[in-house]
Length: 212
Image (cartoon, rainbow, N blue to C red; front, side):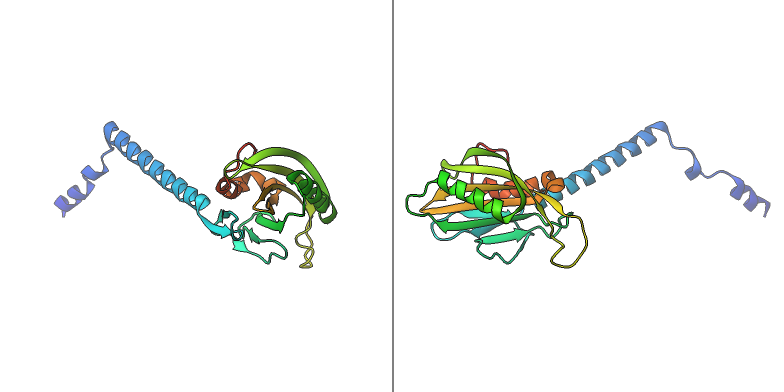
């Protein structure tokens, strides 16, 4: 019994404090592991942001890229509309396109003027912020209009929530006898967060010269 007590009281070699080089080695392993996990997470997030699917505007018109996870909505007179179901705002970020035949003798300048009037009549507190001359596709002239307006997305559902200031861009160009208007819109607070999604559609049109 005495021998057993002596053995139990003797410090175990496994309880000995680690040597400094062991501590440094363990710290290095931990740092490498954390860096690997962060890199893996960043890669997954980047792939999710870049994941896209094609949307055709029609025969002889370009095919656009939109975020793969975004959901299609009823479009009305639009060629298509997709919305981000994971938007942090009550106003879901969206991408849409409108296509119509050009009127006889209608130019891009005239179409852009008429479109601005339409926006001012249909959007609450519409305010054009700036407009830029840009190009799309293989150098086709286009206009990128940045604007803001006030939306109340929860009103139709009977919910009580503050209105939202929406920031949006209309990209207008003429192609094959048609006016094409591609629109991106988001809660102004979420604009920067949604910018990578909007860049997908602009990059698919080879937009040059503007600040998307």
